[in-house]
Image 1: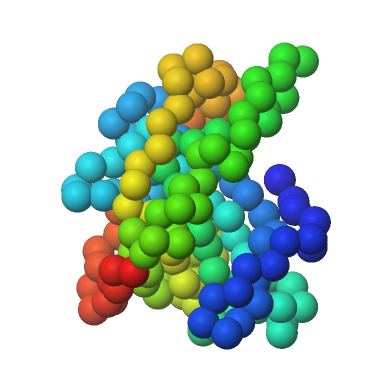
Image 2: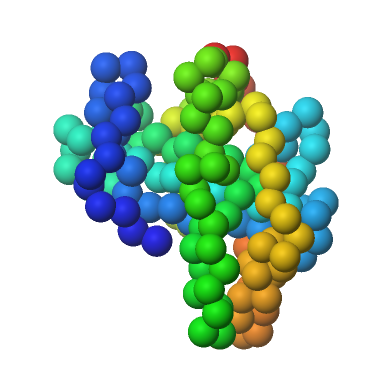
Length: 168
């Protein structure tokens, strides 16, 4: 899902423009997220991919340390068209903006989770987990791809290596 350039986030003196929202989910409630909180994985994770406005696009920004910011939220939803049915989700109620404002989040430098996995991504992860009801979660699990149901579209948890996680 592509976003318009009407929203700008200011982070550490840089303006970031949200450009894309995408989701990762699993076939059951114990897998699907690409991050874990206190070693626990969740059924769904949303990524809001933002680029630094000084670069002009995600394609250009992905090569710079301050180029990409991804805001992540687990167990969330969006408006979803599936087999001519609409399952309505309100993004605002699932992204925990208050947690971000109050400093209840983790920030670390990592990579995109989809190939080619560029390394210059700043991740912002709220520590409060949001919930989605079973019916809405099942809409995701019933999405049909070219090869059948689209599930387990997530990358396994990666080693932290020497990355530093800063708690906000």
